[in-house]
Image (cartoon, rainbow, N blue to C red):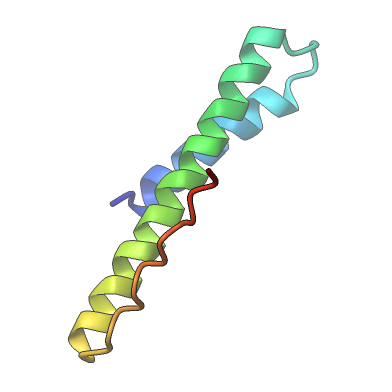
Length: 72
């Protein structure tokens, strides 16, 4: 899991790129954008993991996976 310190360090790096007085290059922008999206994905995964842990602790039944209908 990503720690708060690591999360804030990465956010600071992205903020530094945005706060530059000089124009940000397209490459810097794309890398910062990708990093922000990666952090969001990691946080979403952490939330899911924590939810599953809480559900197991309280013996809550997991929802059944819905099967997708195949179009034919």
